[in-house]
Length: 261
Image (tube, rainbow, N blue to C red; front, side, top):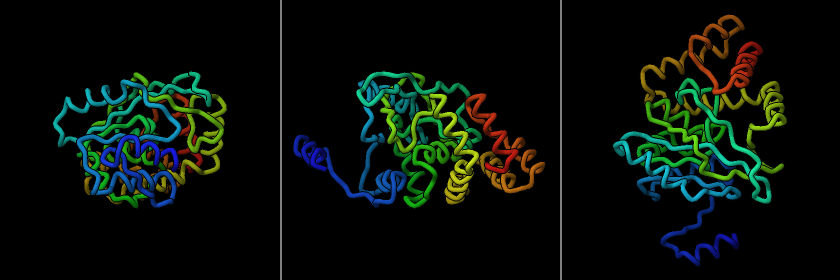
């Protein structure tokens, strides 16, 4: 707080304001700001405390966002440059190449919120869902909701953020073998299923806003994941859900077969 107060004094209260969040976790914190009607702008960007924006982040985002009419929900996001606690580069986040679609969003968060920049139409959609939607994470929620209502999510292959990887990350990079093993263990322990339960409950708040095709996909996904093995597998295959990588899709198949989806 002392650092923030110093920053506010330097730049003035017109540019910097401090707010006390709901103190119910990072998801509620971000959603409370996104859904605050007192905050108005053309574009919004999310920042995490220990990451570094690269100099071209906002200009690359603006180049995408200004190409399309402002009334269309648009989200810009990107890869990240991975750094250690001292700021040295240790790699890049995965490069995802498959289409960004609601059928992908149902099973996977595509990009960190610290890379996201979005327009007012996106914020209005998020406000309709409300600050108490309680999804698994705020960035996954943005991808889910905006793809569900037919908005556009653009994934830039050029990194725009240095993401600091350290042992205290709440949700870390999935780049390393150790991270893959950890995520496989979380899947087996039912964490992925619990996250999906949270996301499905959140999506039910905005089901009426979905496109017809996405509403059918959502209903098939929601119904199938609770059924016995054969109907579950057939229904989820019919829904067309997918992840971005081969390993991810293998994990999705395992989750389907074991009822942990």
